[in-house]
Length: 286
Image (cartoon, rainbow, N blue to C red):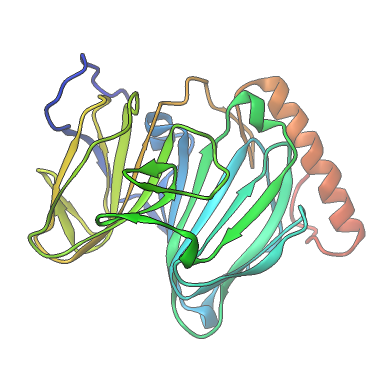
């Protein structure tokens, strides 16, 4: 898949790709590193979850390396635990940022009584970060700033900036528009990747984007125009395109085969420790 290229322009950007992903029980996979993630990298994976806690699937400990994950909870509560040493619960509007980097294992799931809805994103890390030490950061809803209809989860927009220690040149916004409200997103300089996914209502940009859809805009550093035919909630991502190939492992995304090999070795090391502690199911391959 390729996205049409063009010279810098000031016109609004067109939709060039759309998907509804595919369902995995209560989870909808909208982006994977082997498909849409190659178009919108550094955004290489995106799940939307809508989980009833009493029927929540058991995820168990599983590993990652070379990426950072960001779990944004729109409604309900989600637990998390990392081998980097953090453990807790993400409350509504809160975020957990986990930089897997050289390798980490984590687990979690819907908890409490309220239905849990939200997104889990993977961000491909640049070479200087993909093999660094892992770390996790939890921020409650009160830590996130807004500019107009946009709450800034990653990056900076207008006067609002995120406290999440993410790579630069990435914006990830949670946006709410009221019926008939218009909004024009002007991306930062050199942000040539842009996409949105709608979880409530619908958008006109100018094509209609229905709830449950993800659309990718053409690669330009140009504005994106939105109008809400009804009350609408959506996620917008924009970034300078990740310039590296995606080198994929079973649980990892790296920029080179050498970095992937090192990440998988660290995953095996941590996994062997978890297994010796009786915290890892035998069915997971190392």
